[in-house]
Figure 1 (cartoon, rainbow, N blue to C red):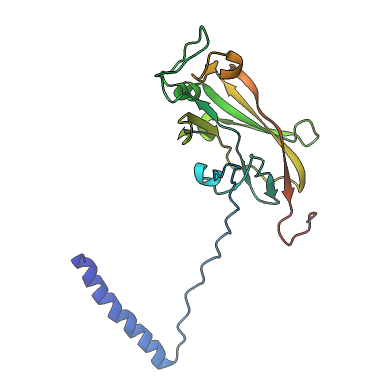
Figure 2 (figure 1 turned 120 degrees about the vertical axis):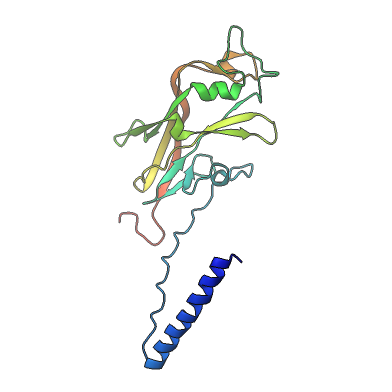
Length: 220
């Protein structure tokens, strides 16, 4: 043990013992240490049909709304929206593109990341309750992932925590904005392998439900 730390312990421990002994001798009560606040219970993780734990994968501590297995939020709790990721060829070697397309970065996933501008989240699109919020690339884009089965690279948009909604049924729509056309390096068909410049729909009117907190009526 470090010598300075050993000396400090040698001095402090006898002092503590003397203090406790004095309190016992005089009948004084020694106050019990304050109880630590109860930890907030962790939310159930979002596990996809293929067994992927999205909370673990993306490092999210909030309830996730996105895949068909994760469509329930809880009243009063913030939640996070995920959508299907974008896959590309693993690198420049072997990447193929539609005629005339020239990527801005050698690796297709870097080309996508460099052109990604923002993601827009619309709640209850087309209703009187419609609200939308846009987050810039640095706030939502997660990258550096490789699919273990296919070996493809991918990036995913993961929203910051969103405000709780009223109890009941809702929808969530997600739009992406790119500053230029991007192609994934996996094929030569623009309609299948490329994303356009500008803003476009990525996930349309995904339904989900907000339920009351356990033991609390829906209207409270």
